[in-house]
Image 1: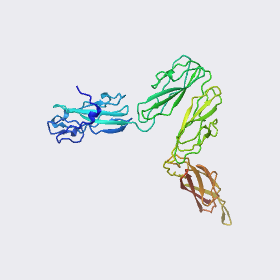
Image 2: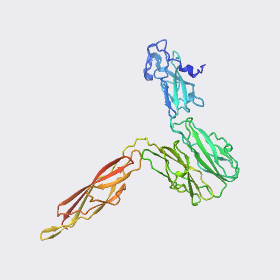
Image 3: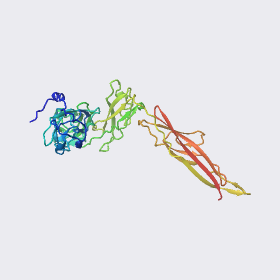
Image 4: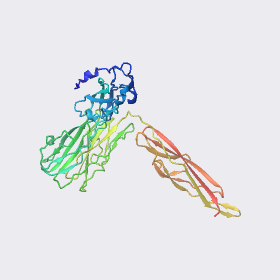
Length: 458
């Protein structure tokens, strides 16, 4: 029978002395001259890791008597695990074999996992050695997903599905469901959500109408933004769907104001929508309100921000009968971020060769010009490493080339007519410069346009 020692006591233990035989190596290198202190276990170094990935243990420092090395057995056990953890010996990838020298396991909650290693061979079993795996939660917040909107009937049980919620570091999640809206005929509240501490609560509506429910999840250190689902109970009018667009992160080139995009919103019955943007959360130093929208009823409203930080905005739409569940969009501004210069790419050099028919009179050849020529210039492969919006400008120093839209990434350009000489190529080269800029830096690239015109016999 083995005693489960308190963590504090375990941490005070020292590795068993190996009488000068201690050393690191792999499983085949652990044999040593026979000694009364062998076998000797070595559970490896203590480790500090983030939750979400596997933890590899290391018993390669353990030693065995050389004549018994082939019968070596590694016996790993968990002496203690954090409260709430379901990890036990079955979580180890290998155990109690010669191959268990480096087993691994995946921790399920943050905290200290104290592991014990005993090694044995045909002659004896070692004293235990201990290692502590300290698992911490990372600094990324989890993401809540309350599942699809639901439809149902009065008195019929409905089940929400928050199982798609996740944490970037793989932490076990805590679920917080809340009733955020109910029709006037209902007196139901969050208390009417059954099993609201898990991923799949149930709800039995008491009357017709639209109910809204929010889900927030926690990884034990951070809380997610809420995700909101709607329940349409016995209504002939189907619920419209709000789409607030994609969240964005900005550095020093942040848009001012933010351009919103609610055009993805729709109504299942094809009814015309009315839009409403509101502020959910702003940075601590911000004084922004709903008045910072230029037109909160427009699908492409603009929002003026005042300090850097994270702004959480909400869109709801109505078909004139019912309001949708809110949809959230987040804009983050970091004015202290490093701003890298963009890279300009004006495309490949262009080589144009044309021929014209010349006429002869008294042994003198008269050749018409090659006509003015339109070509396409493509700078769309230019990019900004920070993802900042870029502006474009095409230029040519002699002003001979006409750009149809010099401020576009892709533009048509007209080269002037090129004179021709009989059986001789007349060549003109134009150097076209593309400049691309973010809010702070400019980069340029040059493309060569070579136009050759040759006169020939008809």
